[in-house]
Length: 178
Image (tube, rainbow, N blue to C red):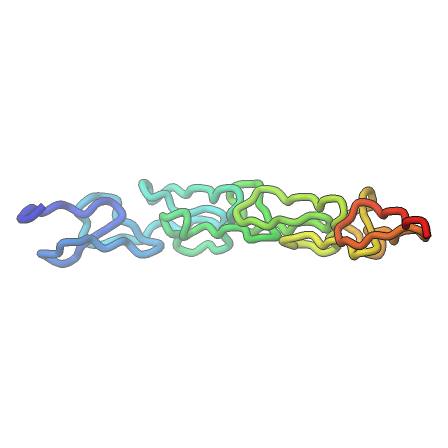
């Protein structure tokens, strides 16, 4: 409001008289009271945790689907301190220092996930940490073989007298008479 001074809220400061805006505290620092003229260093949180914005002596666990691999001054902003698990990875436990790669036969195409997805019939994946499955080549199919095998064993060649023109097929078709 014009002509009215207001204190800076928690987590911000202003070190100049007459300023009209507040400055955010840098990562690893925080102002725990309103009207602060500086931010103070906060405690160092262990890996997997970030700084509680309301209590310098408290650290908060990074959420599932995220991790924190550094034990330096922690930001009090969870989105800045904790990193998202990327595609091909997951994390289903809080306060972790790394994400887990999806197993062979599985994939994850999204970030921030707590589990991987299994390859569908007609697909396979023989590498860890992948964001998609691979379709069986034309002339092959997969419906029961392990999706975690290389294509040569995950996908079955059509028998003599049968064909499959599409990739990712579940079965082969009998050739027409003639």
